[in-house]
Image (cartoon, rainbow, N blue to C red; front, side):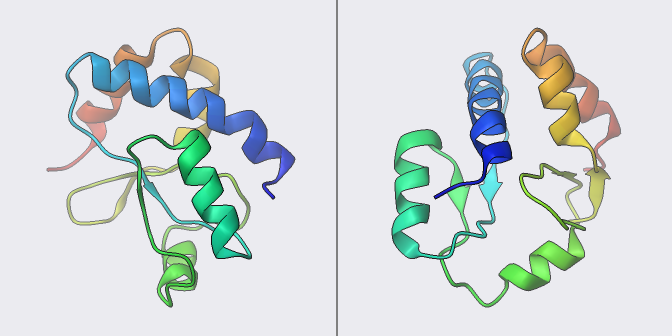
Length: 116
């Protein structure tokens, strides 16, 4: 069972991901789930996250990731630098606001801020 905010955001992120990938851009989404049951995660991945990577259910590193990447609530979307530091902390809001109409332009803006 996923939260109402996740239900709202996931389709927007799916469209963003698909549009950017179809334009030949190389990037990945890694889902760090807060699901309470493995079946919920599997269902979510199957129905909504075509091709996304995911940290396995129950992985002991999940709380560490949530703390490191400052995720007090879900859903959250962060863009990371190559060294794993946060490049863009409010990527979720950017996808919601600009990602629908200009996904490739938004992605290109992110690339200018990301450190290789």
